[in-house]
Amino acid sequence: MGRIVLIVNPYATKVTEPRVREVEEALAKAGDVETILTEWPGHAREIADDAGVGAEAIVIFSGDGVYNEALNGTEFSAPMGYIPGGGTSVLPRALGLAREPKRAAEQLADAISAGRSRKIALGRVNGRRFSFSAGIGIDAEIVRRVDARGRRQGKRRPGDFTFARELMAIASEQRASFQPQVEIVGFGRAVCALVANGAPYTYAGPWPVHLVPGVTFEGGLGLTAPRSIRPLAVPGLINFAFTGRGNPDKLDLIRGTDLERIEVICDRPLALQVDGEDLGDVEQVVFDVDRETLSVLVPEG
Image 1 (cartoon, rainbow, N blue to C red):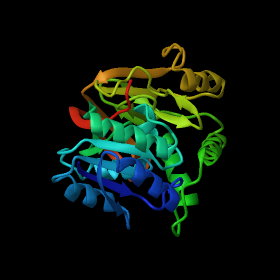
Image 2 (tube, rainbow, N blue to C red):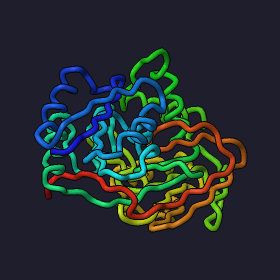
Image 3 (cartoon, helix red, strand yellow):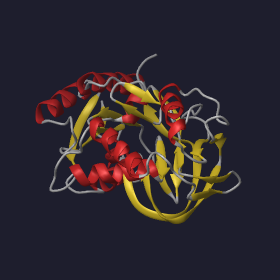
Image 4 (cartoon, rainbow, N blue to C red):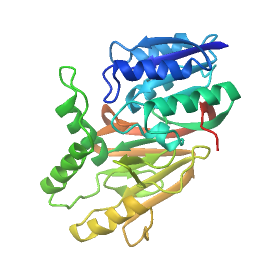
């Protein structure tokens, strides 16, 4: 049996020592497991850079932020697997893996033994890879505010309730009325830009949030950008988010699918998030796609 590198973020919401042991035991059915704990922000990137040499698979037990770090540290010499360890863990859920870590590890072990993987594209924003979503403006500002509440002094990130509360706070501050503040080259002015590499854009508890519907992991990028947001439009936008359905013109949305490149110019520095991680303020960004880049381990069926 080959070598399986297990990267674990011990600070992730659902990661505990007993669960790490369960994951190790499940993966051991497919190979020799080498467990490495992350110790500082960005450490997973360094680990993945070293781990891929000679490994049969790299498995990450964490949340979406450390998945993203590992994506940006590997040269893709080994297939990668993802075990839900964060509060949301969008990527493994979108790939069809179980939400329970032990069961997801069993699915990955089966995939490693069977040699079963799937080639997916990765998005990039100013060269930084992302697996499922990136946004400029409102959603990135929510991420920043949530991080300020939960990532100080080693605290774990708060859950979905805090995200919803921060969204309501921003809406209240603006009286649910938002004006254009970005120029999306070739599309026009918008309040913010939501860019997806796969679907769904995120989850709210058990429910998928379809802010950028019609996107596949094998295709190009998807774009949703509201030209403006008014109080009377909010119910329709909420319905769109949870169903992926609605008339873009009636909702005053810019929409695009299977795009190779998206350029956004901001009126002022705005927050940028990538796979749920705050990357600071930006004034101009370029999104593009690298097709069939990554082999990911997937469950049967």
